[in-house]
Amino acid sequence: MLTEATRRRTITAEKVAINAVLAGCRPEYMPVLLGALEAMADPAFTLHGAITSTGGSATLVVVNGPIRQRLGFNAGGNVFGPGWRANATIGRAIRLITLNCLGAQPGLLDRSTQGHPGKYTYCIAELEEENPWEPLHVTRGLAPGTSAVTVFAAEGPHNVLSHYGETAEAVIVALADTMASLGSFSPGESFVVLAPEHVQILARDGWTKPRIREALYARARRTVADLKRGGKLAGAVEPGDETRWEHRGRGPEDIHIVVAGGGAGGHSAFIPSWSRDRNSLSVTKEIR
Amino acid sequence: MTLKILDPTVSADEATDVAVAKRVADLDGKVLGLLHNGKVNGDHLLDLVREQLAARYGLRDVVVVRKPSASRVAEDAVLDRLARECDAVVTAIGD
Image 1: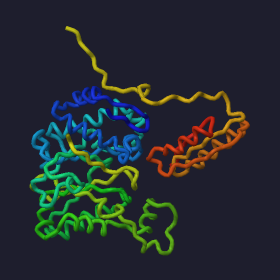
Image 2: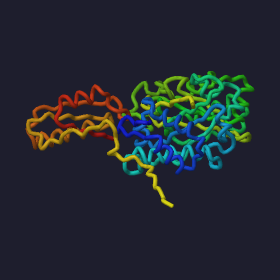
Image 3: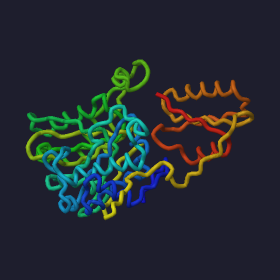
Image 4: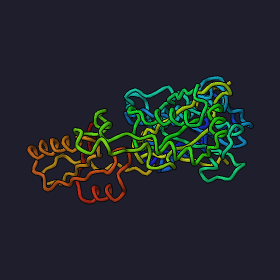
C-alpha cells in the first residue's frame, strides 16, 4: 500500500498492522497511522532522504480535527512528552516502520550524526479549542470539521521562553530570535507551536495568524556576513555581506502555526525543518 | 495450541519493480558514468575515481552527471540517460 520511491520497498497493510501492534497502537488508530504514512510517501516529503540523512530528522506528526477527541490525543500539557497512548504509539509505530520496513537502522541506512529524541515518537495534536484563528489543516486548505494529519521531517523542538513581556511584541521578539539562531538557520520551513499563554497575548493585542507569519518572516533573518562567520556559508566575509540579509524560509507561508501546550507557562516551541531548503516539505492529508 | 510468529520486517530483496543490471567483468572499451550527488567535494572524489579507473582500463568514454540536490532522488531522465549511455556507473557523495 505504501511504496517508498527510492529503494522501491512496498509496505503492505499487514506489515503496518504488525508494527502498529508492536508499538502499542489500538486498532482504531489505524486511519491516523495510514494517513501519516500516505503523507510521508508524497514525493514532496522526500522520505528516503529524511530517514537516512546525517541531519537526523524525525517525522513530526500533527493531528487535527474531531479525531483528536475520539482517539484521546493530547494537545495540552506536556504535549511533546509522555503519558498519552495515541500520541506515544502512533509516533512509535512510524519509527518501527522506518526501522523494520525501510531499512533505516542506525549505522546502516540511517546515518544520523546525532539524531534527536523525537525519533522514538514525535506526535502531537493541535489544541484547536485554544486557537482563536483557524487550525493548521484549515490554513492548509482542508475544510473545517475534517480530521487531518500533517507530517514534517523535523529537528527537535527548540523552547521559546517568554514570561515577562506580556505583550505580543515581546512574544514575537523571542520567537524570531530563536528562529534566527545560526544552528538551525536555513531557508527551510518552520513549525511554530504556540503555547496558550502566548496565543492569548497575541490575540488580545489584535494579532492574526497572517500577521504573525509575516512578522516572523520579516524578523527571523541573518546577514550573509553572520552566516559566513558561523560556517553556514562558504567563503570569507566580503564588502556588502554585512547588509545582505537571508531569511528563515522563502516567505511567510513557510512558517506554520500550531497551538498546543498546557494552560500555564510561556513556553512555545520552534521546530525547524530537516531540509535546508525545498528538498523536503511538510505534507497534510485528510484522515479518512 | 499453535503459535504463529509474524514478521514486522520488509527486506531489501522484497523491493518491487527492480531488476539488477548485468555486471560487467572489466571496463575496457566501456562507457563509465559518474553521478555526483550534489554534496560538497563529491566532484573531487569522482575525479579521483575517474583517474584511477582510467589508469587501469581503456575507457571508451566518461559521462559525468550532477544531481541538483543531494537529498532528492535523481530525476528519471538522468537515470534513463545513464542506463542508455553507460556500461557502469559510480555514484558518490561528498562533505
